[in-house]
Image (tube, rainbow, N blue to C red; front, side, top):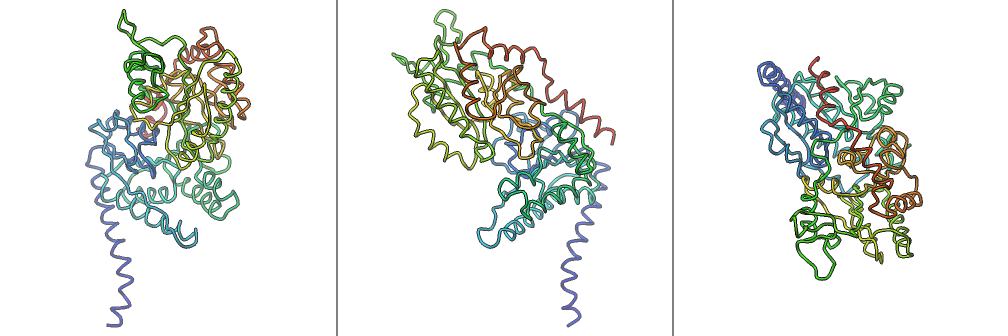
Length: 466
């Protein structure tokens, strides 16, 4: 009896291991006989991970069946939901422990996430030729996905959007033991991927120089549905938003439910037209976190308000700030405390299909994204450029790979520069001879490469040759 009791812990460990090996062998056999399948993994909100959704759509268009794994908190693109080749398998977002040392809180969460992801990939997902994984977040996803790829005969494709350790360093400081551990983890497991992709040339060079990782640059490109919005669709969108947001409503006398602050129907032709003296429409998309300093935009808007009230030749301004995040309520309260007369601010959460329409209807975009590593680029600017929307963007190390100052937009370092740019761009708005119009014309004439074509040229040959 004593010997049997001593053998129980070993059986407890050996049993699940044998089961995993058997499942892995079965999936290897299935992989050789099943239709081509790819797992696309995001240890985050699928609906707020556009690049991984684009990977899934491109894979599906080229004959693969796709399982998209991630948290299902936000609605994905309509093309994802309508595709008969893409299946979404939801993961449960696990909270951190509310008690105990922080290291213990992280440790417990990592163990539970590892078990959940391992179960999903081995049991729920069909045998996959490739596992596409977004990093960050890569802890514990890189190790788990590599283990599953070894076990089941898949190939791991790691898509570097940024460095997880640099994001963690914003909260804990760069010298914190957890940040050091995260950097060691990414460096170790990143080298084991079969294929590494990254978002900028600067990141590719950094991975090669400091991490000994060879990566292929796949710049973010706009999807085909990011484009300029025709006036009739602008009018429909503005009327829809006017039902819930006062900034879009017609304030003239007599007010009309068929007229927005920006557009109206021409009584002769019945077509939508811009209203004379309409406000300028500025759009900024943010995740409402400390690394995206909203206070820069708020200070610039205060200065614009002052200049406008003081008699400068400036239009009234509607500033739409989209997104979700932990500091949204805090900044919404700050906005409500402002006594703006010429500036109106609203913070809607848009459906996935309405966001491209808004960008395609706007006059200027503002990007507050600051890279924690200095090596990634803001996807929101990519989307804005797809809609031929000029941008003012806060400057950082490799932004020049996307925003070309004085050609397709402007870069700024602080609120004072942004305020000066808003004054210059909106002076005598809408001026067809102004710089804002010239930036838009440059974007229209640039013949931007779209995601589908870019993916076919860069990613498809890499996975077809392996």
